Image (cartoon, rainbow, N blue to C red):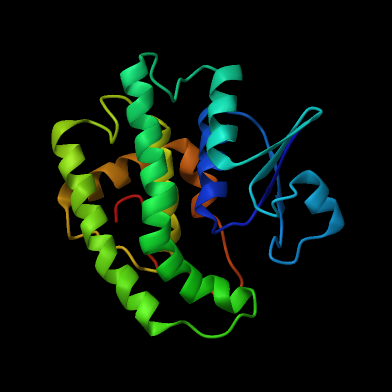
Length: 221
């Protein structure tokens, strides 16, 4: 039995969910209000963060470590390149999205528009929202530049780098904060990854009080 303690609009949880689904591993999803951590949850992860994965008798935390662990014990289909240079590039881009993109965009848009309300932490800070809306343009342009040279973000094969990026963008797309007209190559990339079977459960997510736009689950958006 595999259990994932998660929050639906967490990009870090979504990255793990995409990895599990791509490898066709059945998982029980348990929604966790991590901002109100229970003693049981803190025993699973003293950091008080999601995702947390229970795999057999092991409890695993931190999305990148979980994904790479899953890729090692379930190597097909591979999500990490075999060569050191390829693995470096995947890890570099995963860090780019989970650190730089998270701090400059996701935390400024998703947190302000959704998390604050869900967690009862007040109203959106318009300065943060404006900053995030400006910064996402730079990131979409950077992704477009990468895709001019490669089939996927880190190379010619689908990798964890694509899942990291798609996890963040799918959360932002849920609240209509991605301008898909800015870069045609990025839109084509997202359409390609969005149409994969591993994406289906993400497109069915619903957060009470927040309805996704009509195009969110549309594969031909």
